[in-house]
Image (cartoon, rainbow, N blue to C red; front, side, top):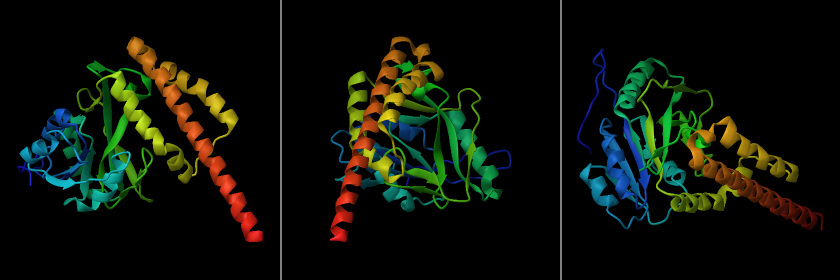
Length: 286
């Protein structure tokens, strides 16, 4: 168990929170992440067969460590497996390249103290600040007014093993938003360079078409074509990627390419499933 740390509000009430961090070979950022979670009294670190010093760092912070030799394409697969292991009902879900600002730590504690009488709240989202290398992003779909639900009640929220689309409130529960007041952000030291950025997103694309299809999403050839122009407009203009100069232009082109590949993948899965359905129906008639 980590060293106990409790933040007390004006009413001297104490909230106990669990945290889950899933990582693989991200020891260079993990220490900063775990240090920002010391206000939690239960920290779980799931290691995906790291070859660096990640495990040593987790042990330094007295985390409960779970070792995984096999892992899915994203952390949602492991979070779905571990959420029931959290000691407390309220759980913070972080990646190793994220850190909770001190101001946000206090806001989370105060919000949870208020929620003790609110049985309809199942998650809390917070302001999410992205960095590309050492550059703080002001625009693009990543850097413009972004938010993330990182505090969830394990009995009111579910995590499915689906990349990017597997987190959701259970029916009947609502989300609470913490307002941006200045420094109260979740820092996301997102990508170190263009090479790692491209490699990570190529990995995401591997299963995205299937995941989207299973969630009921569909797309047409016309939709794929229209989406190319819309997503660039969205990333560079609507979400003000132009504020980040060349970095914003690069990210906008990449986002457009990524959405195109994701849509093509979804369309390919649709064609495959339709073909399989026709064959199955033909065989059934026979």
